[in-house]
Length: 184
Image 1 (cartoon, helix red, strand yellow):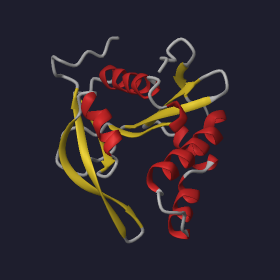
Image 2: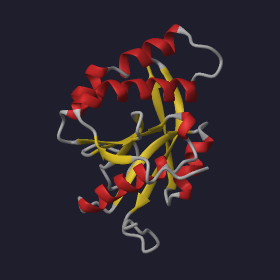
Image 3: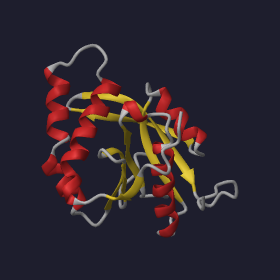
């Protein structure tokens, strides 16, 4: 597929982007994790978590950074990095790649890669030697993307919704590795 590098802009998110971030989150989360029909348990979670007000709150916090990919029609993806985020296992980094969502119809166009590069450059600029993330263990496509981008699986954790727990891989990227080139 065509790389949209010349047609998209990666930029910091603003409070005016909050509704778009909420809508993309709902779309991607439901498309990725809800495969057998929507029940109230998952609907309630998604509608509580992915709101305009919640994204405005996130964007107002110093330890949160969000970048968006914007094409001529609007935002098609975003990356969220959280600093001071305690990792679920014993690693040295508190810099979490919290969310990387790209609308499914835009997959394969280089948007996720460009957003990830932006986040990794941010990590390097902060002086961090590593960053980490948790990814659903059943999300093989996302896991493969991160592994191909230099992340290594270093452990397991669980994502919790109420009393339900879902296995997640914990992945880490060491930014001090000689084979990582953040200047592209």
